[in-house]
Length: 361
Image (cartoon, rainbow, N blue to C red; front, side, top):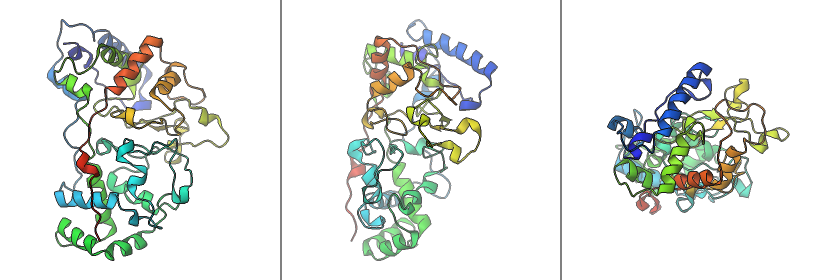
C-alpha cells in the first residue's frame, strides 16, 4: 500500500538540541523513507503505522480522571461569560467551535476589545500536548485553566471574584457537588473541570486517518504526494518538527517571521527559558484541523495555508537566530499545491455535542 511505506517516519530526538552528526544520519534515513513512499512493493509494520494515529482520548493526569459529570460541568464553565470580570467573555469567546475552536483573528482580542499580541491557538486535540501556550509557560491544562480568567488583558477577573460568582449560582453549587462527590466550589475544581472538558475536544477521524486505517481512496493522489513532500527533508522538511501523532514536537522554534525583525519583538520561549536559542522561538503548533483555524503563526501574519507554505519555501524573512530545524523548503508550484492539499486532509470532525450547552441559573 502507498501509505504503508511513507509511514516509517518515527524520530524522537528533542527538537532544537539534536546533535549535528545524529541529525545528518537521521535525515539520510528520512530521505530514503520519503523516496519509498510511492513504492507499493513493501509493507511497513503495523506498529509504525500506529505512530500517526491518535487514541480516542488523551490520557488524564492523576487526580483528575475522566468523569461524565465533571465533563458536563467543564463545558458549562467553558461557555459561561460570568467567569469573566465584567460578564462579557467566556473561554469560548476566543475558542469558538465554529471557528476551528479559535477566533479567526490575526491576534486575539481581550478585555474591552483590546487587541493582544499573540494569536489564539486552537484547542482541538490540546489534551495530547505535552506543554501548552505559545511560550510553553503551562505544563498541563489544569495549570493553564486559570491563566486567561485572571489575566487583566483577557477575561479580567480575580479568583476570589470568580468563586463568589459561581457560589452565588445554585445550579453551579449543585453541579460541583455532583461532579466532585459532594465537595464544593474552589479554584482547583474549576481548573479540573475546565481541563477535563477540553480533553474531550478531539479530532482523529480525518481523511488522513481513514487512509492510514486502510481506505485507499480517503486521500487524493495530490494529498498523498503532499504527504511525501511533508516527510521528505529534501523537500518540505515539515516532519522534522511536526511529528506523529499530533503533528508537533512540543518544541520551540524561531522560523524567521518578519515580526522578529521589529523593534522590541515578542521573544516567545525566551521569557521562560533565557538562552540565546529561545529568542523568538514559539511552540510548534499541531496540524490536525489546521485548515479550520486561519490565520497562522503566533502573530497571525499568514492568512492562508498557501502563505504558510510560501514562507517556508522562501526561507523565512528574518534570518537571525533561526532554529537549526528551519531549512528553506525546496518546492515548486506543484509541490506547494500538493502540500496544501495534504494539510487539508488532516481535517476531521469533532463531536457537535461538545458545543451544546445550557448554562445553570
